[in-house]
Length: 263
Figure 1 (cartoon, one colour):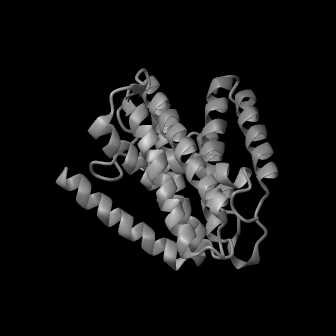
Figure 2 (cartoon, rainbow, N blue to C red; figure 1 turned 120 degrees about the vertical axis):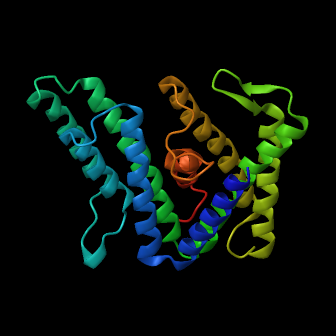
Figure 3 (tube, rainbow, N blue to C red; figure 1 turned 135 degrees about the vertical axis):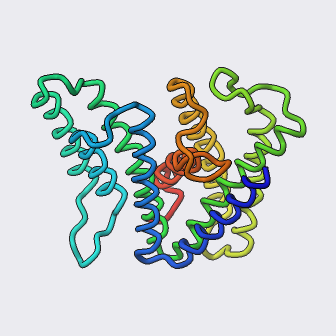
């Protein structure tokens, strides 16, 4: 527990520092985490690390997770990158004479899109006007929901939320996490009412709590299917990159798609 606490605090401080630095530091940091997450995804599915279809997946994660390119280069659009990824992975099944199965290509496609798009919208959020505010608001709502669900669940949780997928999660914990997420969002609203509206703050909190819980359950279901406890061992006591970012990957695109953050 002590090791978990220390590593969590240190990682949190580093991450907050990178958010405040912004510019290329935040984008580069998230891109590295995205590539580490995809590596975990590849290992979870027991794919060879150096097969060319796997390399295509890495390239797609890199391109998808970076909405702006350095040196004035034009970033590839989501549509173009997605189509190229699909085309190259399907071509791999042909050129390998089906040694690379369609199922392999499909998994690599899903993994690259799931991870790449999730991290892309984290960068997009930081690049907004008042980007630090919107980024911290969203992250704090996610973290408040996670912490609230954990502590409320431990204190009064009795009704299992989804025992077949995540036996420790409770309905009481989920409701408690949602309530604490709303409280955190309202704190941001009362401090900066000129930047975020009351109902907008509530919407971000609700979306972060609900989508964040689903993101956690999605990763839990996948790990249970693969028979592993953690996706990796990046942080002592915390698991891998995907274990730490499973909620983020769903929440950030979701709040943008709902129009809760500025364009």
